[in-house]
Image (cartoon, rainbow, N blue to C red; front, side):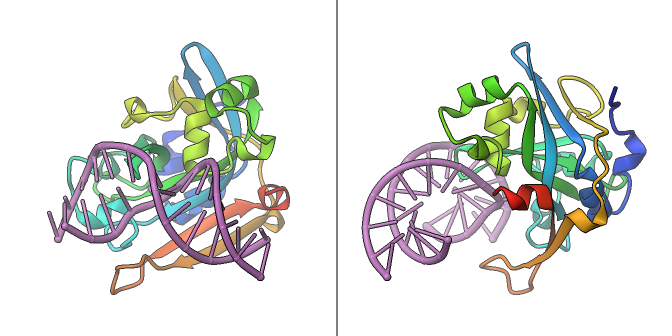
Length: 193
DNA sequence: TAAAGGATTTTCT
DNA sequence: GAAAATCCTTTAC
C-alpha cells in the first residue's frame, strides 16, 4: 500500500520536489468519495525572487501558507472562478511551492466526470484547475497537511529520467525582470495530450 | 490546430 | 483600477 510522502520529502529544493512528485498519487476524499490521480505535470515556484510566484508580493494573508512549514497544501483561487493546488516546499520562512498541473485518473473517475460534466476522458484532469474541480479540491483545504486525509499525496511510481521533460519557462507579461519557472512533466502525459 | 475573447472576483497597486 | 500560476467556446485557416 502506498504511504504518504514524509515531511522531509518537501523540505528540499523546489525544483527537485517538482521532479520527484511525478508519479506520486494525489488523493482527495470529498463528500465521502475518494478520488486518486497520478501526478504527471508539475511546476516549480521558487520564492520571493521568482516574479511569477505569489510570494513575489511578499508576506500577505494570501501567501501566509507559503511561508509556513513544507508539506502543506496551498490552495488558491484564480481568475474569479478556479482553484489550484500546490505542495509547499522548503523550510518555513522560505516561500515556495510546486503547482500540480495535471494528473491521470486512478480512482473515482465517475465522480470526476460528474463534477466536470460530460467530457472527453483526456479533458478530465489535464489542467491545474480541471483536476481540482474533478477531485473536489477547494479553498477549504488550504493550509492542511498533505500527509493526512482528506487531501494527501502518496508515494507512487518512480518515473525514469528518460520519461521526464523539463521546460524552463520564462516570462510574465508585466515583469521587467524575467521570472524563472520550471515545468516538469512525464512523457505519458505528453503522449496523449 | 491555433488564436482570440469572455467569464468572474480576489488581490495588490 | 488592473492583472491574474485558467478554462471554454468560437472563429479562422
